[in-house]
Amino acid sequence: MEVMTNSYPVRQVDVNYDWQEIQSRYLTLYTGLVSDALEHLGYHKQCMASGVYPLTHTMKVAGPAFTAHGVATPSRDTKVHDIRLGMFKSMKPGIVQIRDTQGDTSCGHFGEISATAAAAHGCVGAVIDGSTRDSNYLIDMDFPTFCRFRNPVEAFGRFMVVDYQIPIFVKGMDGLLKVNPGDYIFGDNDGVVVVPSDLTIPVLELAEKWFASESRSREAMATGRDPFDVYKEFGRF
Image 1 (cartoon, helix red, strand yellow):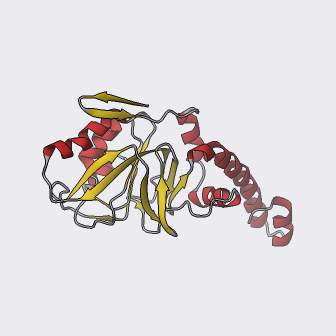
Image 2 (cartoon, rainbow, N blue to C red):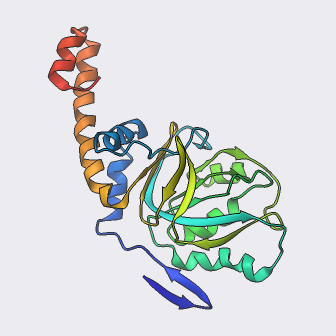
Image 3 (cartoon, rainbow, N blue to C red):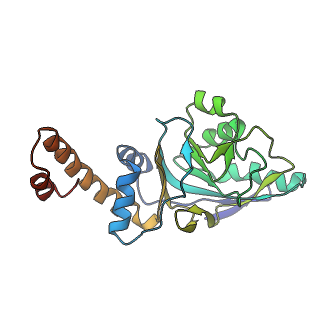
């Protein structure tokens, strides 16, 4: 859906599920299991490249992708800069902001004020294929933030978000990984997985099934049972 307001397009992705229920269910899982489920369904390249981790090991994030496309530029054009401000009008409760950076390393691509504004519009976390700054503020406000590195340098005059809610590319485990608005983003201390939007529920249900089997397998292993018997019974190890 796209409408115009104050010269900036409002682009929202409507999901056909209760975002709070789906989020709570994903958050009980872990990325390794979701990645396994995707591979089982034939999707082998859905993880972001190693290096994108949360600011603290307990942070997890889950929600439909709100994409932001940025480029390195020395421009200080306020009209272009205002695109970043206008995009907040498109945010809906439950979304996860995910930003590309084209490999830029010149500055902090995300910070506490951006997180505050995003959270006020319903954003539940951010995944930055680059860096963040204001890390202590982000940690103290308990805003799940994933990034490749940290950098205190201001982005204005070095890097700008120039569009949003369009397909973007981030670094994947095997080349570039395409992220569409509405794809499901799930991240924990091991990294970030991108679930194609139409697989949000099927992947969740399969991962939940395996999660239950793993729990029983773990309990059986802890008693000292023969590993071959446990694997034969539960199918997960």
